[in-house]
Image 1 (cartoon, rainbow, N blue to C red):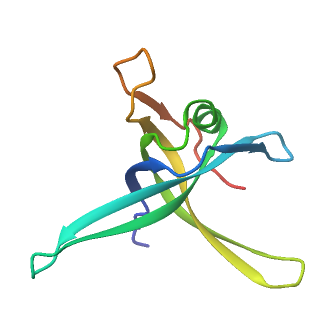
Image 2 (cartoon, rainbow, N blue to C red):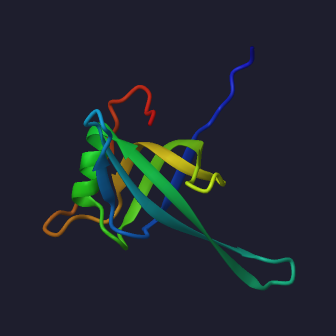
Length: 129
């Protein structure tokens, strides 16, 4: 069977402060959003802009780092894969959510008192709910 590829790399700004919680087994998971704006010039010379919002989920050690250091408005590089999950609400309606499951994160804004960017990576092989 041929191999596929599911890899996503984004650079953008944190849309809201991270939200960390724990699974019933005690595994930390942090979610946050990243907004990415791209610009281009049309054939007529008009400048256009489009913004995409990415829902990001980090697990384990990376979840703890994201929760501790990321804040709304900071620039960040996130790398991982896309995953779509589904669930039914209490009324039986099915919902879908596509998320970027992060395995690497680099803070592109330096922390106060530091001139370096910060890098974090997941030590997890597979990040399942």
